[in-house]
Image (tube, rainbow, N blue to C red; front, top):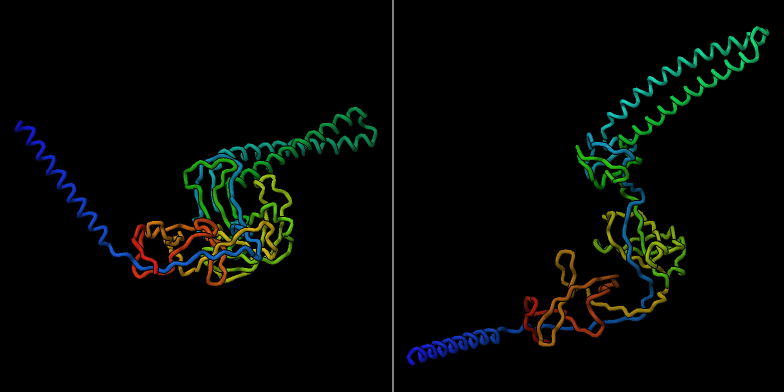
Length: 359
């Protein structure tokens, strides 16, 4: 009986302490001061004047260099970022087997040359004898056939040498044009395989944009038309001109490829940067444009977000995907609906879950 009474007492004390702890914790939470904030409703516009699509910058002159032969890499002569000139040696691939074949071909050419010279002398001699009726027609035919065979053997040996020389060209990878090395996918001692890119180079300064236009809008895009290209990473708008409009979307998933040449600019643009291309045509597929002020955007590295208000009056950080900029406002492509409110300013430092009070 005493043992049961002891256990009951411990349980009662434990429940009392737990209850006290919960009471204290609840008291601390309730005493947290709410941060005063100002909110605003999302502005929407259903009359976007321009067709806007995503694109990507690339160099006009760019090449991924590979080889047609398999072999070990003797040396890589360049590094990423190096400037190279046209014809400069970039990668050397071991060509010991080609050197042995070239020696054999050279010996074959020497042998074929000697045979051809002898056949040519016999042909010229019998040609004179035949003219003087000192040789028969059959003898002349045999000598002529021997001469033609020797001539063909010499030509065959020379063509084999041309083939070996062409293979030597694939063992020494050179720059097809002057530019800058953008990637290096091989090191000394690696095995080079046919068709696998070893070095990539491009000519800086001349850039173009590859944009994908939906089928509902492609009929409005004209070759030669001027467009605005917004480079998102540097927040710069550059003028461009449409130079190619694809007429097939068979291999691009229903999106039509449009190529745009960019005007010369001092902006620090690089290959691979994402863009928004604005065409001066009315958008056929109408969509509601969601706009928020740029000063309300929260940035963390390359991420952009905004604080919204939960039903329990706490701040929630929402990451967004942004589009075009219209003055002091920016388009929200995803992450925020047209019927939501967002926090414009706060009288304290906001964080996820912070208690707020709307002024």
